[in-house]
Structures are given as structure tokens and as C-alpha cells.
Image (cartoon, rainbow, N blue to C red; front, side, top):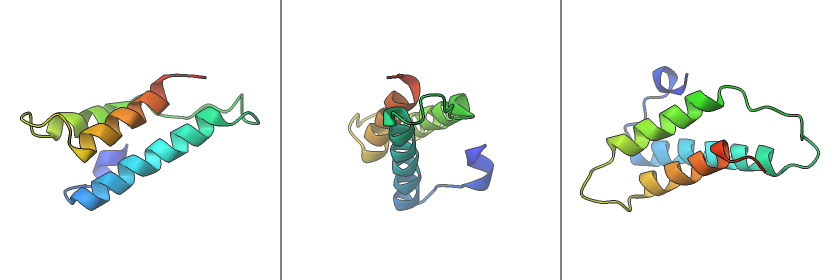
Amino acid sequence: MVSPRFCAQDLTLKLCLIRSIAMISRAVRGSTKCTDFVLGRKAELVAQMVEFIKAEPLDSMRTPVRQWAMVTCTHLVYPL
């Protein structure tokens, strides 16, 4: 699990983690050579992104963390 090993209180660290997961999931999803590759623990990563979204202030819908977490969920959830 990501959260016990990564306590992301710093905005920069949190955004780096989210962007890294987004890039990895996008690369795996878009690769034509790895059609049989399965990203393990995908549900756990989606759950972590949801937790990041829930932790954001409710008064602002367009925070960088919320936007990147939603993009990451999109890459994790939707297959090609």
C-alpha cells in the first residue's frame, strides 16, 4: 500500500507521487508491446487517488492535486 510508506503532507511530494503514477499507468495503458501486462494493485492505487481527492478542500474544485488525481484515475480505470 502506498499510504503507510509515503506520508504526503507536502504538496510538492504529493503531486510528484500522483504524476508518477499517472505517467506509469499511461505508459502501461498505451503500450502496444505489453498488451498482456496487468498493473498489479490497480484498485489500491485508485483508492489512494480517491483519498487524495477527498482530502482536498471542498470550497475549491480545481486544485492541482484534485485535477491530477482525477487524471490518474482515468488512466488507471479505462482500458484501451
